[in-house]
Image (cartoon, rainbow, N blue to C red; front, side, top):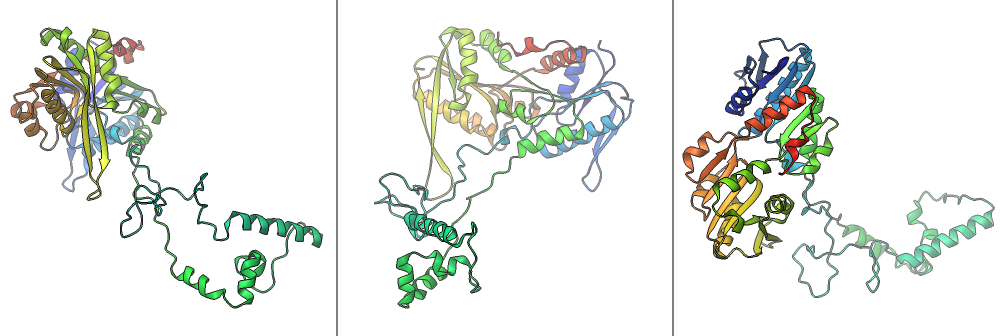
Length: 435
């Protein structure tokens, strides 16, 4: 039994809270978590937390926004009640997939295409557009109407006149016109054109036909950074989570973040439940998860394969068509897909279809966080997957009833051990080891 510790369970996953408290040998704290009739979150802590080490368990599945706000209010309530330290335990971290602007959203303004031979759409802007910066062998930028040479000549002329006038600052014309409208700022050819009366027509047409260049196509809000700031501002002193989608997310916090790994659980399942696992192939469903999958493959001495997914934008809509290609050999062998989370399950079901097409005997999917939102369960039931293994970082009670292919691993003891070690000031690096 651990003393001087309080464990508060949120409404997102009550069963996980019970499991963690069972391992620690303490009862969960008596709290009231509900909603007012208007829909606002109500939090009431019914026991003293003064001077205690408080751990609040709230996962990111289900109604994410309600659970996040409930967590923030609970943290604030504990700090107001003079808790010694407040640690937020988030098995699945909410908004961890929105840590930064997606890499495929360049945000660069579109300009008129300068690529010869390309058919342009009606508005004259294409995806092959090149920036206006001049490159060797290409025409100069159209942003300066008079060209770079004329600009340099004008600057040199201004410097000469400054010296001849004996003043380092050129006097502004007294005609009331702005500098851009005076003859001093025009090259010799323009002066001649003005004296001949041919100045107004071209300039008026350019001004009338001027269209502002389109700016960024869209703005992607960095919600992940905001959530990190909200947790710190609410009063959290420490964060414990598991398998962040982007490991760099830890850098957004000014407080300690312990990112536990679900890989030892997945590795243990492979060794105990997959027959002849040494001949199996660990497969990463995309390039982003290659490091995660190779960590397991290397530690177990198993071969590794990769599914390369290439996204290409279509001209019809903004959606992207993904072409999948297997790099590796799975013919006649068991393929084990490794990923950190499955939301709509589109990635793992398409990967399973490709693996069966390439001759895989069986296809397992081992995923840390089984969010399984929308029609994910129906998609898995109709897919080529033989078994999907997830952890209970998200409540899987309803999913187990609907999906006979689903199997759930317990993570409560991992978080209980992390809580015990943090409470006693012990190292938790042993929980980070793959072996």
